[in-house]
Image 1 (cartoon, rainbow, N blue to C red):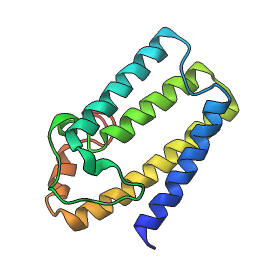
Image 2 (cartoon, rainbow, N blue to C red):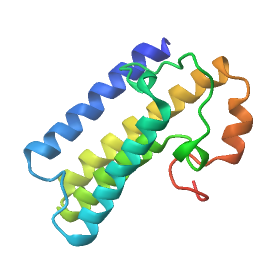
Image 3 (tube, rainbow, N blue to C red):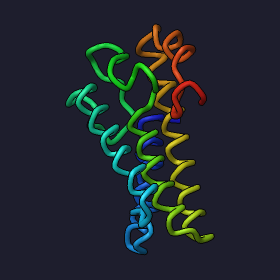
Image 4 (cartoon, rainbow, N blue to C red):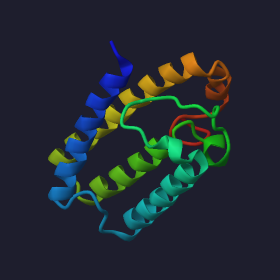
Length: 145
């Protein structure tokens, strides 16, 4: 299977789920804690984007030139952008709790999980040092998971 093409398909599923949540007004939190989590998540996304640079904007999973990034939020998380997006997503969904919203959030979470695994397979091929980095750095929750 072509991992880059599969990652685009997974990305489309993610966009669909999030679009439905936005249209249903269920993506953005409406309580203080949820809003705080979402603000912090956006700040984490910005920090990660600034740390990673312009090369992080790719539709398909695609390890780029320039070496493995292990500074900034990447010291604590292998996937800070995906992690922050999950925090953003679940803070909103839990603020608008319903079976449909939870199902859409689970679909989006599964899409992100699949994409993370795809990207990691490509990173291992491209950067042999990625395995050591992965062994000491958690995926989405610092020091936990």
